[in-house]
Length: 365
Image 1 (cartoon, helix red, strand yellow):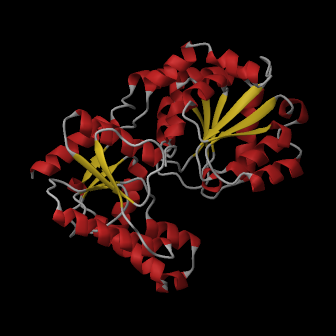
Image 2 (image 1 turned 30 degrees about the vertical axis):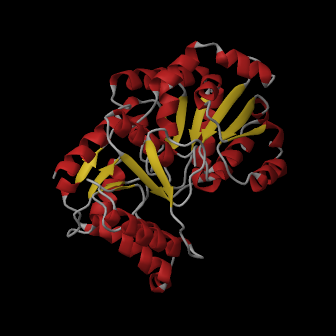
Image 3 (image 1 turned 135 degrees about the horizontal axis):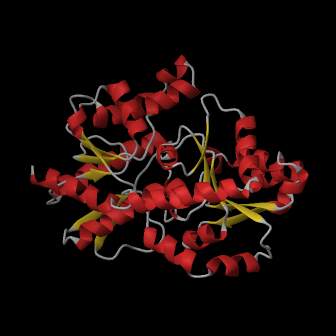
C-alpha cells in the first residue's frame, strides 16, 4: 500500500539496502503500487478468514521460503516469530487490548495468537533486535515484557526535507489555493493519514464546527489519505461544515499540499510516531497534535505547536486549541517558525541509513 507511513519507511529502508549493494527479497501478502526496482518481490498465498489466522499463515509460508533460501538476515515490519530484526511501527497489543476490551478478551483465539507473536519479538528470551521510533512506545513495551535495553535501537525520523522545502519555494501554494478558489484570508487545516477513525478525523470535524461562525466560514479542512469518507461527510453535513471539508484521497504530492496549508492537525487516538507531525514542522506550519502521539515530543521540544492532552481525551481541549490558532495569526507564525528552525537543527531525516547500519551489523553476527 503506497501511502501509509509504515509502508513508506519500509520502502525507504529497502531502497537504502539496494543502494548499498545488498540482494533483497521481499515477502508480503499483497503488493500495491509500483514495483521496487532492484528487489525480488514475492506475494505469498496467505489464507485465513481472520487477521490473526492470516498472520499465522504468513509466518508459516515465510519460514518455508526463508529456510530454502540463502539469506543473511530476516527483517520484519510486522510482529512475527523468528525475526532477526523487527521494525516497530505498531502500538503494544496487550496494552491496547487492556484498554479496549474486558478480561474475557484474553480467552479469544485472536488475543492468544497476537500476544504470542508479540512476545516472540519482545520477551526477554527472544533474540530479535528492535528498531524503534518513539521513546514512549519503547517504554510501554519494556513495561509489558521487560525487554532488555541492548536489543532496542533508536531511529531518527525519515522525513524528506528536500521535497517539502522545494514545494515551499516553488510557488505551489498560490497555484493550489487558486485552483481551490481560496483567497489570502482563508485558512487551510491539513490532516494527513489513512485510517480516519484512528487519526481522529471525527474529532477534527467537531472542532471545526465548534469555531465561532465568523472564523469557521474562513476555514477549510483538507484530508489526505484513503478510507471510507461517507460517515465523516455525513457528520460534517449534520454540523453544517460539509462545504469546508475536502477529501483528497491518497496522494504522492503531500509536500505541495503542505505548502498550501496553514495548520497541520493530528488529533490521533493512537499514533506510534506520526510522520505527518514532523512534516508539518518541516513545512513551517503550526501543529496541533494529541499529546500521546509518539512524535508529539518533537512538537514539545521545538515549541512548534499545541499539544492536546488526551488521557483522557476531552473534545473541548481540541476545540480551544484550534480556535487559538485560527484566531491568532501571530501565534501561528511564531509556532511555525519554531518548528521550521527545529527541523533545521535536529536529525529528523536519516532513518533509512541508521536502520540499515543496524541491519548490517545483525547480518554479520
